[in-house]
Image 1 (cartoon, helix red, strand yellow):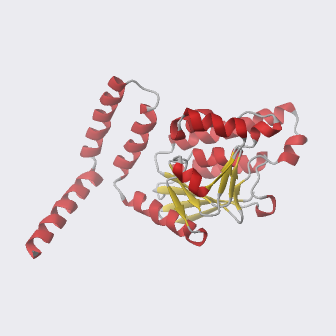
Image 2: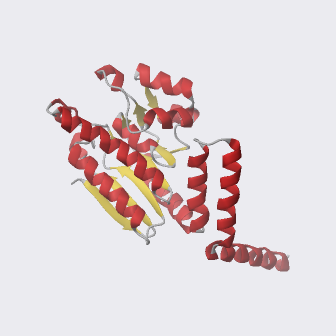
Image 3: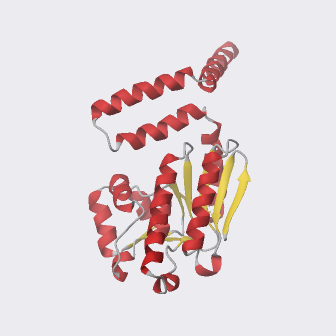
Length: 256
């Protein structure tokens, strides 16, 4: 269904592969992406996920030709798919890295925003052309974009349909790294492997705590942080990492 899944253990690489249509989504592709993300979340051999597009685009969003032929019910289902993807991404207890190659427009940008970390190829172009076509965003974009780049830039992008270069996206915090095109996939996989190598309880609770804090009071956040950090301390992987760190420091001191 043009969603390729490659297990680069411990990283699940999910590649949007509809290159002839700049990786535009119809309902079938959205359903396939939902399945791929759910499977990655449920696979105990997967420690992190990388999302990337094939060819010249991450994704240009919804398939306009397909949308023009949709029934109302079809359109509602498509919109629900974007929202389902947002919910799944938040619930997956593993870091998700979006490697934004080429165009990430409309629904394609929405998919990039559900990731925890976003890298961009130097040639990437990001934007929200929805307003030009008379649409408003879905897939949690109004919530996520407000928190990622702030209300001023979020409203500006949504209303003006301005296209951003990778460097401008970096400047406003939409992405955290700009990478030469030919190195993007490798760098994203390297980062994902690094995250997957960390003790999983800590990584899981970092993601949970930051997401919960966006919707909580300071008091609730402090309570949740204490609960999660104690759970981290009790996990075997974290205790092993602590011991390894201490042994490494002691070994380093003994050599000086």
